[in-house]
Length: 146
Image (cartoon, rainbow, N blue to C red):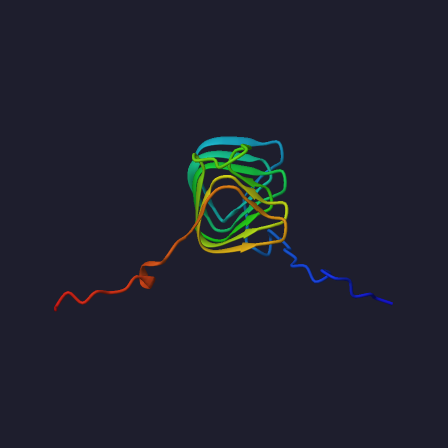
C-alpha cells in the first residue's frame, strides 16, 4: 500500500546530457582558467574560471564550479556552484544565460545571474543577485513621427 505523505509531490530535475545535446565535458578534478568557448554545450563536473561563451546548454554538476564572466546561449542547469565559495555575493562572477536558469536543491549561486527565466527547486541557494533579461522584441517601439 502506498501512503500519500505531506510534501511527497516534490519537483524533480532529471538531467540527461546526451538528450540535452551536450557534447563537451570538463571532468571532475579538472581545472580550466582563462578565455574559453565551447560549441555544443558543456557538462561541467570540474572547475571552470575566467571568461567566455558556452554555445548550448550548460550543466554544472554537483561538485562542479563556474566562476568568472560567461555567456550561455541556452539553458543553465545549476546543481553545483556558480561563483566562488564566499559567505556573501561574489561580484566577480556574472553568468548571462539566454535561456532558463534551473537551480537544483544542491545548487548554490554567489555570483550574479542574468537570464530570461529562473526556476528554483526546494533547497536551492541564491546568495548573489538575479536579474531578468528582456529580449529586444519585448521593448516597446516608440513612434517618433509625432
